[in-house]
Amino acid sequence: MWATRYRAATCPARHPPVEAPAAQRAAASAVRGAAAASRSSLVRAMAGHQHTSSDVSDAFSKRMSQVREEFEQMQRVQNVLKGNEQKMRKNIEPLQKELEQISKQVSAAYAKRDKLRQQLASCEEEIKELEVKKTEACDRIYTATATVEQKRAELLNNASHMGARLGSEE
Image (cartoon, rainbow, N blue to C red; front, side, top):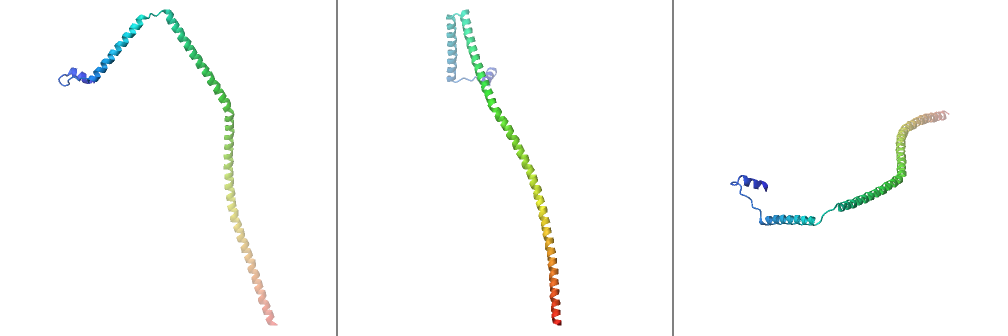
């Protein structure tokens, strides 16, 4: 708005002055009137009352007393808070120690689990190797048994053929 007024004042031909609406002008006038009335009532009140040094001293003492009371109240609150904090720390300390113990136990359990997993993997590998050896041993037993059975069958077969020849020669 000031820019428009400035332009209107510097270049009246190009920018005609802007008129404020009637409601705005009335409100501004009322505000100016109220401020003037307030100033005058304040001046009248101050003129009728003369301050003495004892009044000022009493007011200062009263305010200092209030400040002291507020400070003491704040110190009481601070002491209560310190007491609460000490109680809380006292209550929390055993819990923190318990947490540390449990954390150590958890770490030990994880380490034990990892060790057991390694042992399990080693056992599983050993089992696989032993299964292979077992299969190989079974195959060798089968081969040996089959060979013995085959020789036995041949001997029995040869013996039966001999007995048949002996019986036919008689």
